[in-house]
Amino acid sequence: MSPKAKTADSAPAAPAVPPALELLDVTAAYGRIEVLHGVTLAVQPGTVFALLGPNGAGKSTALKVASGRLAPTGGCLHVAGTHVNGVKPHRLARAGVCSIPEGRGIFPNLTVAENLRMMTFRGDLGTDGVAEQAYVRFPVLGERRTQLAGTLSGGEQQMLAMARALATDPSLLLLDEISMGLAPMIVGKLYELVGQLASEGISILVVEQFARTALAIADAAAIMVQGRIVRSGKPQDVTDDVSAAYLGAAS
Amino acid sequence: MTATQAPDLAELEGAEARHARLMGAVRNLGTRAGGPERARALLIIGGVLAPLGIALILLGWSGAAHTTDLFEQIPYVISGGLLGLALLIAGGVCYLAFWLTQLVYATRRDAADTRAALERIEEVLRGRS
Image (cartoon, rainbow over all chains, first blue to last red; front, side, top):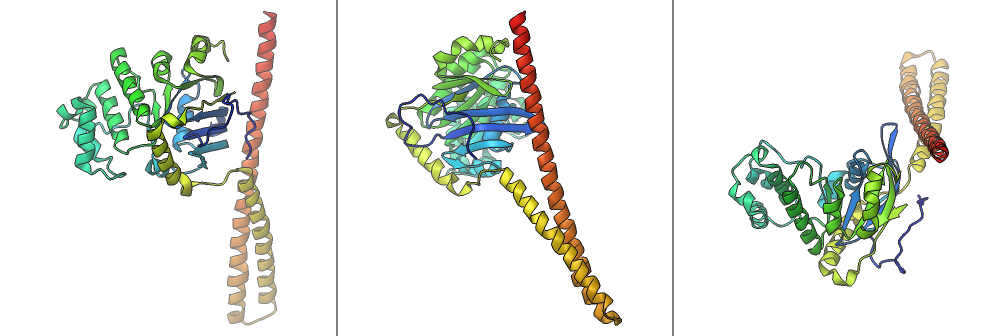
């Protein structure tokens, strides 16, 4: 299927490698209600792409499509240049596409250590390796390894979710509203970590309602309103349009 | 509107390694593009199975009608009647699936047209006010 939308890549020559994630003219629907109306975006390898927009813009739906949890009704979903429309999310996860959903997706009734143990399905690291790696990156989780995940603070839960994601050694990380319900200082720390992960070569698509923190570490950004990308480019190019889009002017 | 951004890949050794690994991992996950092709396949399958089922039922009836021996009629009923009925139902389901798919596509097209018209009206009204 050839995408109807023009590609607006302003680079003089196409990159030698395909993007880590590419949505081409993607439409998606819940039943008969179409939510995404021809979304086109590309996350280049080792970069952070921030998908911004007001509540109900379709950002999380775009992330669901990218992770395979929702099959697109039209357009193309490409991961590392391969057409993967309709591929099951667990197969994408095993390939290295890791998603942290809104609400963190941890097991609240299991301890921190048990939550980490659940993530040893991929990679060469065993249970101890995964836990050690997580505790080095997030020392606070090491202190709370026997505590039930549901009793952790919001920031610690998000750290646990990140640690679980990193245990899979992902190549492409999809983050949905990691700042949700967290104090600004914690959010800042989490986004510092996101920037650090990108510098380690992980390609990251971050969906965020609070634009400022995400734009600070993003290499590229787009604003989504009512299921459409209304503005895209470098973070400094979209910064001025964020307020207008959130208040309804860009739609 | 699109959202793409090309990085300087020369600076991204770690990214290149991860990306190469991702490319290798997803290579055999690839699916073929296209929903309309699948709908068309349903139509073709339905169009073949349903007439085949009818033909088998007619053949079964013909065979059973031309003998008075019950033991000779049973194979005609099984091979012709039941198999034919199964094919007819399967073909009908395929055609129904095709028809429903077309209906959903048409509804989405109509909704998109309506939305576009409303947006145009909104633009005009905004211009007047």
